[in-house]
Length: 162
Image (cartoon, rainbow, N blue to C red; front, side):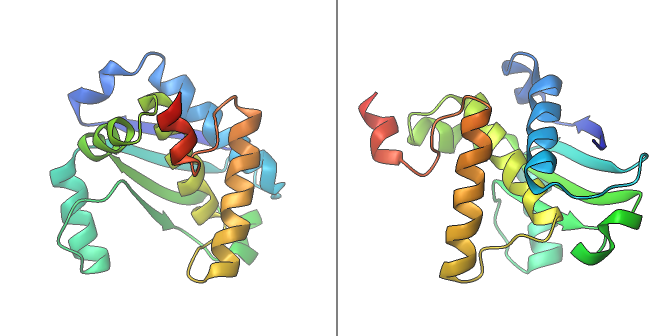
């Protein structure tokens, strides 16, 4: 498994118990599901930040002047993952994550776990630019999250009924 470097810039993240172990567990599960050959010293960087910082990143890198929940920045193409020390960086916005979890009646920890898995899959070359890619990625996310005990994140109606 890859090492996980976690930087927490937003105080709101402290509301999630065992935050670092939750993030590491999600990274490990996503990497294991894809069964990618990695260097022994491979690393994933996770930035747990706030809406202002992620808005700046989203503006700079995607020309979208608004906050978003998660951004992934792969370091290498998927065919070069085996030689990369850094697999890439993932940034996640606190206020957006908490608001989305609340709106969908999900535990924040489950939503964060989903977004970490989603971000790691992007680092590994997965995407959702078309319907086929989206279906494959969502199915993989569901399977990984089920293994972590997290309910289907795409079943919003089911989450609201609980």
